[in-house]
Image (cartoon, rainbow, N blue to C red):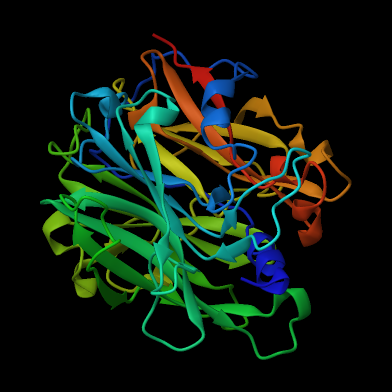
Length: 407
């Protein structure tokens, strides 16, 4: 990937999430305690897991995106620690190469649009995690998944495992019309990618693609709409504490640097049937995606929705997309209403250099230890070449924090 695309990709992140109430869903949770403000603590062992060892010459060397998908389909808190549990981590733009002793990147390091890793268990141990990069016949690094179109690429979003199949939502992207400078790119669709969850490395072998009616181009009165930002299977099979049988698929509307959260739902068995999706319009579920009602703002393009044992639902996100605050919000149903943002962590990596910034916070419930919530966020730079200077390998990789959950 070029410097131009790298720079434009990170700038497409802008905020939104919120919601409206649906009668009969969830519990009130009125007596439950909330997460304490500013209670997050660093999780250095998780951060180190995604660092690049000095001297590595031809491996995974930093990425953003960071969506873990439990391959047994169980997404409850701590489910990743179950015996035999495997988790498929998805990454977006990824450096493949390595670092020198001074933290600069080794010459010949390249960037591809997506890669994966497989983890066994839920402990941050290097021995439990294996990164995977697709290679061509000559050994050159390739993106793990690619669209059929010419000059297009995928930025993976969230996914779920249903009936033994990994179902991944992916933004289909292409270059712009040449007049966008560093922002010369455009989203052109959302595809659903499918591969067997039982494969040794899902998607490294065969996979299928299907274009979904989950994207609408800006029309002058609103911004782009796209779904798949996060997916929450509220089902018995997924281990949801208060299942209602629906798969909730969240999206955003990109309105003037303020991504506003939208929500759709579909029965899990109909996930590949675009006409089966229904969109929340503020009071009812409707078939027309363009009637989707914003249910919150000041969200990031990446976020998570975690069902809690007390009947509430927790949204985790970066406040204002590129802001330093990581926040959570409680809601009484999968569509809210959600309360005010509770700040839990103030990122400092935006001070690494004058050009660095942070974004993309989300929670990882299945990988969380008992009594806490594991959260990650990304670090990046407006100066692409900082990644190759001394210390540059410390920029473009995820950071982790843990937040105590009230008992």
